[in-house]
Length: 111
Image (cartoon, helix red, strand yellow):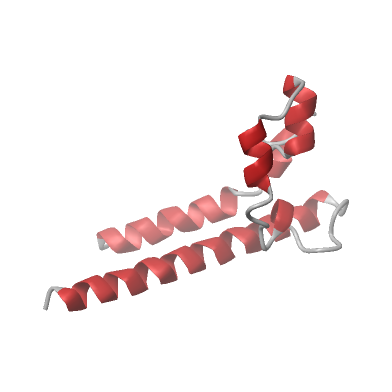
């Protein structure tokens, strides 16, 4: 098996495991997954929101906010896990596609 094949298998395993970010905090009543906090959660945890963080939070709106589809907020854990998987696959396809295109452009420059 080639190195590329092994890498794709590893990425596939990570995709399948991605719903653990929902399941584990839910099962242990741990709140949000580490680093997945919004402005309101940061305010609650620390007592303030850094000015730069607040300013930059308006700069980008995620296409799949909270890794789910619009109108799916509050759905059951199975539905949320499905949305996590779709989000993971979508992100990987976009990043791999961009990386592939950049590689093609750079390869043409060195011909």
